[in-house]
Image (spheres, rainbow, N blue to C red):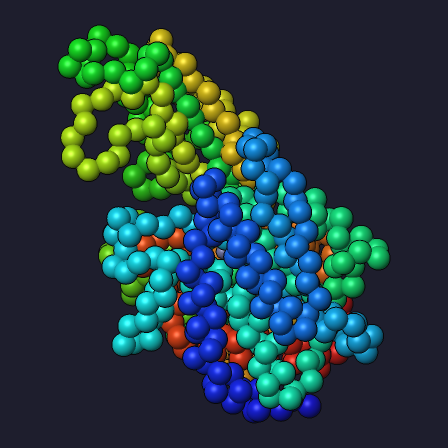
Length: 482
Ligand SMILES: C[C@H](N)C(=O)N[C@@H](Cc1c[nH]cn1)C(=O)O
Ligand SMILES: [Zn+2]
Ligand SMILES: [Zn+2]
């Protein structure tokens, strides 16, 4: 029997302004995990989340994760874990939800139209602010779903376990071991029947999706150094071996203009495309216009939908991210940097083993540097790594989510994979031995990680309904493991 969700939905609508205000408060905390000087703000955001859930009667704990590897002066932000209701109801299913409360860096000077840490809502209901869609909106979606059940007087349909982390945008430092330990018998997450993560986006702007695959991410640094200090280019230009010149040359060997990775042996690690798989891409509701809209231009590598989707989900990609130590300010500084560190990452797919990728990368970078015959010094290392994940969408967890999408949005969701990475997804799957579902709230034009990140008011409010409805359908699905 379909659950009666009317009063829950009406309560979400009636409290929409308060929920937006909660998001405004969260966006105002600049919880940037990549910036050491913001660590207190990351912790503050974790505590904000904890107190909001405690006020709703959840049992919450802030669990320390130790020191940050490589930066031992810094404490990692805590894992905020919780249980709602406080006492387990043995007659109900237990769902473990995960999200992250840290955000990517952001500054107005990067080109934001509004202050990144002030939620700014335009006349179309687009709510701009860093973290609005990634991942503060979805995380608060769970909080708002609990509150709406209470206000509507509707019985909460499941036992909810929560795990919110503050280092996801920095490779989920410290979390893997914690999850594995807490999934052991008798520990905090031991009773989970399934896992749900809301931390990705629809493929377009109109049709919701359920996601069953992610690419992995291996993130590298190449450091090149030589001179004892930064130099005057008039005095030393033409006479000193410049680290930046070497670095740009080395980085230029990694990938060609059409996105083809130039590292020998890497494409051999990719699983061949099967006949069955071919048809999946044609049936997905996605157009190149959707893609151009989210890209903000028509500067795509491919002109057709299938190649674009496969380029995002099915094949690895290599992106160059930046050069630390290089002059990047406005104006014209005539300096020769003494030490520069180039950053790049490879998004990985089945069957690429992260350590095999490392071996090929180091070999390639060493050969490229050696071929320059430079007197400078080069060092290449892996900053962090998270493996790809592909699951079965043929499971009651996905069936429940599909019913919830139909109820809230009036359409059947597409089953999609995702180009981004959420490293702990695989950890949750392996540690719980249960199905993991990705249930996105935001849409393709949300610009996560970019300037002017936003979440549409419609996606936030309907998203709260969706998360609650999903829990009700989960409660109704017959118990059968896939
Ligand atoms: C998809 C998710 N919302 C996200 O943005 N994940 C990050 C994870 C990551 C990997 N290395 C550093 N952060 C991403 O895909 O970039
Ligand atoms: Zn995220
Ligand atoms: Zn992110």
